[in-house]
Length: 501
Image (cartoon, rainbow, N blue to C red; front, side, top):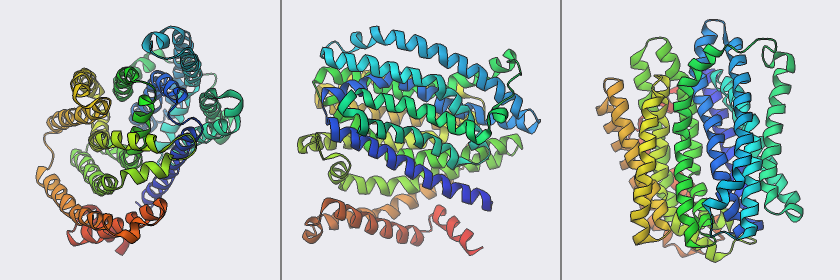
């Protein structure tokens, strides 16, 4: 238990560092390119290859962890690892080549309103991302090994390396290469991340080099993996659909939406990924031990911990969203007008972040049960809903309707997933979930009151935006900590009980 606690703390710290570096990457891009056609083209171009990257990166880990743990229990973990690494490399290589060729055709057809310069950037950005895919899948398999062994921080570190290379490439090469420097950095970072794993394991221990691929074993694995991967792709597919719609609203709109989505998604990326990553091996092991009660409780604890972290964060963000956008982006080519438009779009993404954070926990339940195909069908339905809501909301709200569509789709997606999982596990403990949710919501009311009062304090408003937001976060965090203690929120009480021991 103590080692798990240390691993959890390391994961949280490393995840914070990953998101901090990701924010710096977005900050650097905003500084040099603002909301110009270069950023529009880059965001539009990377969305499709990034869907395949997420398919391999996140989907592979979600499918591989339970599979690897089963084989490891039988003493065949290294053999299984070898089969999946070799097959995945060849599959990713084929997709990389085909995707690079297809970029010359699908990108100009998808964005006919783009200028020739934007189309050129888009095509070659897509190619560089597709080339990265050849190693992304292999990286994901080894990161799955780290997560399965509770070495979460090393897995996150290897992903951070990719982001850092993207930042350095953009800073050092943007004068020479312009927008191409961003995608080149991602390619170099992916290579560096792989080489770190080679050094860590040592080449001779990386896999069983002479072992031939067991095709039957690979087929069994991919039958589980493909539905999981497709489900992971759904979010990117919905973003792709939104960008297709956004392209018709003129230059800068794709950038406003993308900057807003990335910024608002930070709580989801930190809390959602951290909590989901920690509980996943635990609920898989509970199933392997045939302990259904521990499996069910693990998911419930994950949901309540997620709510405990997410709700007050969104409350603070709702009052100070403009400050957050200013701190993150407003410098260089990113001006005050871009801040206002990005802030406006940000509010409509709040529902998306809230619901998809909960869905990240629920999805682990499906993957643990080997029911990835069920959640995949729900995900495919969400794409249809997204198109319908995009057509509807943009008529009344303009491009902001695309962000609102993501939030509404997130609600339906999560609600359906919750109902389906509830049936599969013969019912959650609803009394516990309702009681904890109520306590968390009530405990967040004092935070809301504090934010409302702080908004009218002139001395605070006169501070620099960074100082003001720092004070707001400290006050909000302290108020929430006291409030959760008073209302005996389970997550806080568990932490306190462990400290007393």
